Amino acid sequence: MDTEQIREKLNAQREELLERVDRTSKHLYQRDKPVSPNFAEQSVEMENQELMYTLDREGKEEIRKISKALARLDSGEYGLCVNCGEDISEQRLEVLPYTDVCIDCAE
Ligand SMILES: [Zn+2]
Image (cartoon, rainbow, N blue to C red; front, side, top):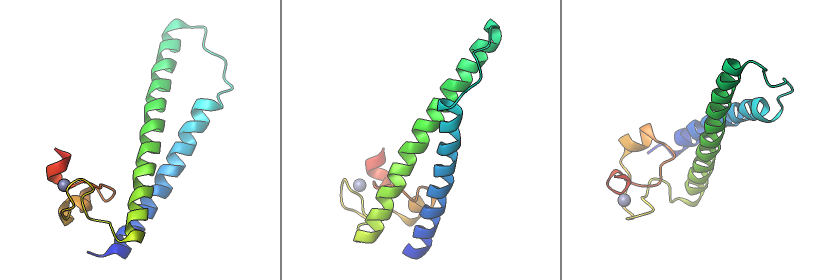
């Protein structure tokens, strides 16, 4: 397992997420546009806002997981399931590089 490559991948992913969350937060919390008086527009705006909240929450959650995975890379625990202690398969890490449970424990 090439941990340097994984580290790079995780760092790149984190950068990307940080940027996205930053953009989403700005959209959410620094809105200076007055609420539309038109009801149909209002509900579209609310839907958009809900979607933004979801993206914001999910993005932050993912960043948290990536940070944890990077810490585990540093401590040498990366690739081991936190639940059963078995190796996490490389295929699984390829798809979900920040996961900390093996496929059996994830199910
Ligand atoms: Zn496991």
